[in-house]
Length: 263
Image 1: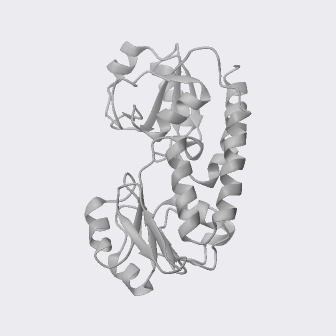
Image 2 (image 1 turned 90 degrees about the vertical axis):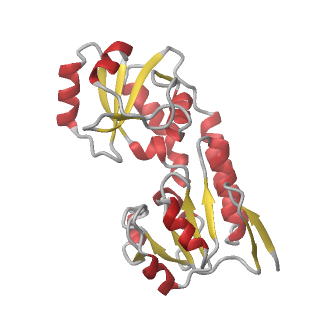
């Protein structure tokens, strides 16, 4: 059996059989691999791979998404490593690629997430399971009705300095799916912004993401004090930025979020 696969950065691999020893360096993709039924094949994950909670505790940890330990990975002898352009450090990935096949994702849209899921399912011998999951996610989004009013939103991912999600990000794409207008769509990626810039753009809503910065209710109060004309809420960062099996729960979350915003 020969499996030829090209990842989302253009690297091509030839596998003689579906992967049996898998390391995932991306939390959302780790959850997806478990959803495919690969618990026996997953031999290493990062310390940030927390879902599914009942299954990740017994899997070897190889460090963080940026500072994973090369020697730990080498000792595990994987036949497939799953990474991501945005989440993993390029220099360390390049080093891993000298020793192992590293399938890299690059995801800014739902369609790109579907491509990743379809291909990773295929090279791990879980094509049918992957297709079922993708169809479930697609149906969920088709049944969701986006907000029709214009919701001008600033989506914050960090505090001190303030950093936001702009265009060319999966978060921005998900804001569009929700039905919101990103007031920083004229910028790209994750720029730092000032309080003055936020005031000048005068958002109707400020979403404080639960990750990567752990925004909490005390931060909501702080931003409400600075922006009395904006509604400030904690947004579930996993729902806006995880591009694996978690996507099947996103439309239902969006519907609850609409109720919270009275939309």
